[in-house]
Image 1 (spheres, rainbow, N blue to C red):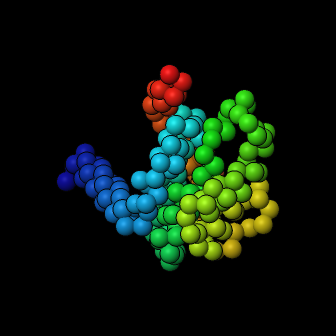
Image 2: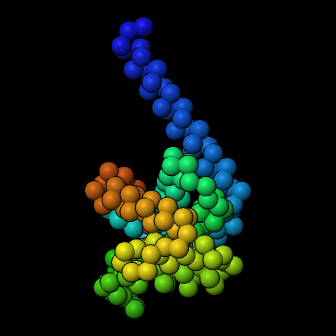
Length: 187
Ligand SMILES: [Fe+2]
Ligand SMILES: [Fe+2]
């Protein structure tokens, strides 16, 4: 077989694997986190930028998908329900952290937002110990006390990986959607 067709075969195989992973992830989302995905507050996070041009909502979905991928790749057994729910809620601070005119604006958002996210999420969901640990420690080492469970270690790793890609603009969101939402609320 020629080099070209070998490369083509490998490429198709890669796409097939990616498609399978994506399908499996959506299945897990539907099974474990449908209530979060459909909630108004979670949906509102698509109107806020996380890093670069990435909305918070997609950032959280990417962190959840990456967390599942890491646990599978490294063969780390973990509770997938808690892993996904904790990842989806890890940045549940519910405001535009770039907006300096916002009431209660804090310059050190990185230090404070895990606590704010945990408070918000606790009001709406009955969080497990692991989910609380995921949200509270996802900014480690900024949050000093290290994660206590493997799920929290995985999410903090996935979050750093996704944030780096977003900051370097290697993974982009759709800013025009956010601008449109702002115009709608302003009008
Ligand atoms: Fe965060
Ligand atoms: Fe994050």
